[in-house]
Length: 188
Image (cartoon, rainbow, N blue to C red; front, side):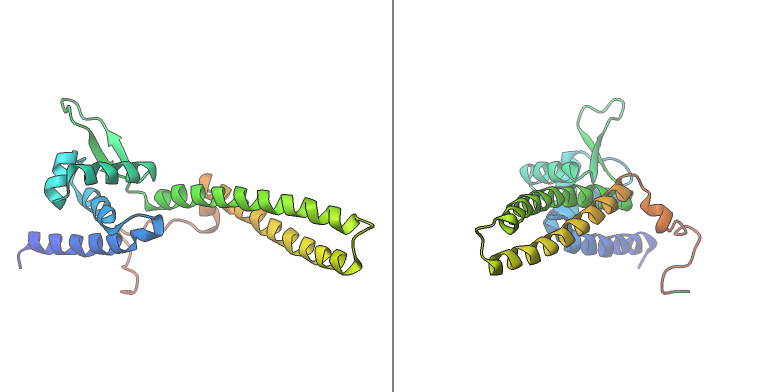
């Protein structure tokens, strides 16, 4: 097998793996394949180049590009003299992870904290209601304690998300940047 075929085989293995695992981001394997193809391309690609490379329709390419752009995994770039839209893949996978999960977690945090706060308010009123039965008050008190623990968790998760957004996470878990010079994991 010649060198170029070996490079293509190695790339295809990674593209297949990325495509299979993109469901983590709510993305279909075909859109994961699109990301991998653009990632390994030597420069930005037009929709037509993507269509030729992947054999997908222009509509599918447009939908995939829009989704990947919304996830901040692709960005539109400008090249002098080129009239067609060009896209390049975000190559900082740390940032892709942060952007996607920070956004998803912030939505979940807000929704859950709003529900917890509303329930806490109602349960606290119930636990202070002189007309409420003692067993109901006890149950409300137990639930208040559980919901306060849940709030503590969501406050912690907010701090985690903040550490992603500010990159403070790297103070605790530094990026590993030895890929050009260091050993391959598991091959030391």
